[in-house]
Length: 585
Image (cartoon, rainbow, N blue to C red):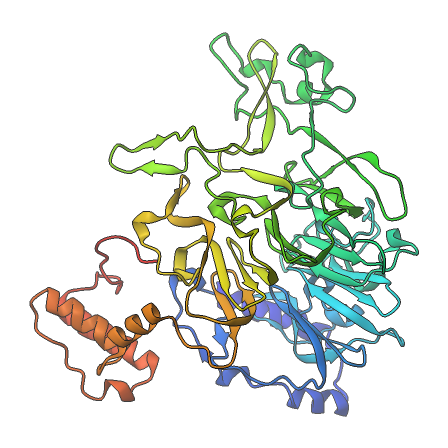
C-alpha cells in the first residue's frame, strides 16, 4: 500500500510541476544528499516513518547568529543584522515563506505530499524589518522586531497566533490524496502583526507547542507578561476559571437540567431508567469557564474561554492577555512546554504552573493516590498530601439533576504561577522544560532536575523503587521534587522530549557515579560486549568472544549481539530480547 501511495503522491506532484529554470536546477543540485545519511533500523514504533538522522553535530551555513530556536519539525535563527533564517517542515505555514510553502518544486515527505520542507536555511523577505527575538512552537512561530512589534505565523489552532476569535477567513490545508481535508487547519503563511498589542512594545517572545508569550519591559516598572493560546490545565497561568453550568448562571445544585440549554442537549431520556446513575458515557457537558484578565492597554474584565470544536476541554484564549499573577514578579525568562511552564524572576526565583502529572512542576507529591501498592493492587490514599485543582465536567443523573464531577483523575494542575518552595534559597539564571520533566541552572552553575525519570532524563542515580508511580502509567515513575545533578558545573541547559542537554563550564567532569557506570560498561570489551558477557555468565553459558569488538561500529555490534543471542536462545521468535526483572529507566 505504501508503494502505491508513494507513486500516487509523485504523480499528483508531477502534474502541477513547472519546468525548472537553470537557477532552480543549480539550487537543487546544492541540496544535501539524504540518501547517504544513516538510517534507524526500522523499530516497531517507527515503521513507515523517515528515520534518517545525522549522528554528529554539523555546521549550518549561517553566519553571525545571535539567537536560535527549534520547534517540533522546524527551526529558525536571527543574525546580528536582524535577518531571519528558517528551515525544516513548511507545512501549516510555520516557516513564514508564503505561497512557496505549497510550491510543487519543494521536496516533500514520501508518505504525505502536503508535508513540504526546506532542507537548508532560507532567509525570510521581511522588507527592512529587523527582528530581535524569535521562538518556535510545534506548528507556529512568533517574533518581535527592534521597534517592539510582535509577529506570528503558522497554525492558528488554539488561538496561538493571537489573531482573534474569527479565523474562518484564513486558508485551510489542501485536501489529501483521498480528498479529505482537515477543517481545523487554518493557518497563516507569512508573518502577521499581532494587532492586539497596539502601541505596547514587546521586548522578547517565547513559545510552547500550543502557547505564545510576550514580555513587555519598561525602565522603571516590573516586566509585564502576556500569554495566548491553549489555556487547558492552567497553561496560560491566568488563574482558576470558575465553572459555569450555562452561559448566564453560576453552577448551582438546585438548577434543574431543563433550565440549562447545554444540559438538555446532552440529556437522552430514552437511555435512562431508575437504575441509571448518569447518561451513557458519563458526560453531561464541559463547564463554561470565565476568567478575569486584561488585554494590552485595556482594563481588567471577565472573558469567556473559547473551546476547541474537537475537544471541548481544550479551552483557549485567541488574543494576548496579561498574566495577573506575574504582575509583581518581574519575570525575565519563560520556558514553555506542552502542558507546563517555568519562569525566572529578576531575583532568580523559579516559578511553575500547568499540569502537575509526573511531578513536572516540582511541587512535591501532589496526588494523594499516586503511591501504588503493587502487591495488594490497591491505591494508598495519603491524606497528608495537599490537593490541587482538577479538570471538571457536568454530569446528569436519571432524575435530570446536575452534578459536577472530576473529568480525569490524573489532571491535577496549577492554574497560576507558584514559587517552587524547595528552590527558593537559590538564585537561578536559566531553565528549560521537556515534555514531562524540567531542569534549571543556578548562577554558580549547579544543575537541578525533576519530573519523569524514564529514560534517565533527570541525570541523577535515582533508585527505581524510590520513585513515585503514576496511576495510569506504571513505567512513568517520577521525582516530584528538584534534586541536584552532582559533579557538574553548567552554563546552559536545554530539554528535549526525553533527554536533557547541558553546556558544561570549562574543566567540568562527569559525576563520579557516572564514571563508575561507564568504566564498568566499557572496560576492555565495550558497552555491548559487557552487557552480553554479563547475561551469558548468569546463564552459565561461558564468556563471550570479544575479539576485535572495539573495532566494530555501533550497528555492527548490535547485529553481532543479536546473532549470538539467537544461538543462545535469549531472543524470542520475533527477534526481540526476552525481558527479565524490573524495567530500566
